[in-house]
Length: 378
Image (cartoon, rainbow, N blue to C red; front, side, top):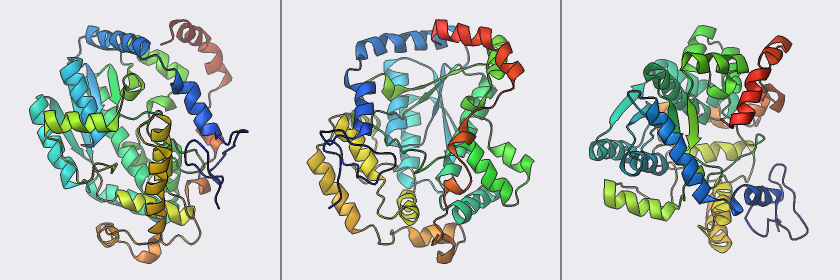
């Protein structure tokens, strides 16, 4: 029988897992260090300071919210507008296969909250080619969605010089897959696309450099020019209970979902993500990470999580109902995604590639800035 953490449900073959003498895994212990004694009172005051700072900059919009139409991003929009009285800009990346539920929720939310919203479509032919290339060569497609979300986030933050970007993800309740399982790092996506015939300009136009890719000198320049911005994960500051959120949105926003236990209702092909990962790592169930986070946060019991996990294990080798539609949409054959070679991101990127490399001159020139950041905790 597979050994699992005695607190969560991560198995003994999960990447980099270790167990203490009580059978508790290092992922649970790390979660405890970050969240067990988290001071929400202090976080609330910090959030007030952040919002006041954004408002003080007197821009057209106080914040930008990447908005998928899913539960978390909808709740972020609701809180920012109704509770915190911010003037947000909502931006949605059209991946061309959004669910009808997400589209309906987006239209309802934008109207009820009376907020500005941009629905951005990137060149569909290029986009579909990006997806196909990642699927055939790296066995996944979610990295293009992540890149597209970042495209609209960067594009419109820069266009309106918005001082604050607010996300609905959190290391407290969302799955935190280690690098060995998945990555959507731009370095990896660029490398796959460039290696498979795309021109540098074509790739660079879509894969805009993200904030964490900036070198220190770039950050100093943005600060001096007033084009810098802060990015926060709202669930890192406020309580985030899935059922409570669901209730609020149904009552206040008329929010609908086909399955209250289902994540990623915004994506028609979410089930294919798990199906493809299982071809890279046999018997790997993504939901075990999500369930484990919710166990740690007290939102689900370990017993209930195991029941749900066993249901998924029984059907892990079955083709998802959306598979035929997925293949047709991307003009693929079954042989294109069988992935007998178990191709993944690990064929293209290593952990060392994630490090920002700066010259010695840049490091020396940026020392005053590093000291300033350390003293101001900005």
